[in-house]
Image (cartoon, rainbow, N blue to C red; front, top):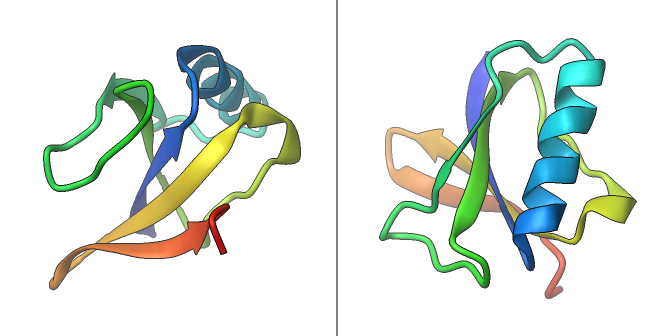
Length: 80
């Protein structure tokens, strides 16, 4: 399992994503403040563990970062 941090444009998006992960059975998901190394519009992020990053269209997703040996690495961004 890999550890991911998803950032959002709004707190509502973070809450929606968190609830959707719980419905999918991702038990280790939690809402937390965005780490200082990562910028975010709303200041809230969702941390979770999964085999791959989980992209959802309706959650105002900003980016997903993987926590690796090199630190937080962006693996998905809506800015591309």
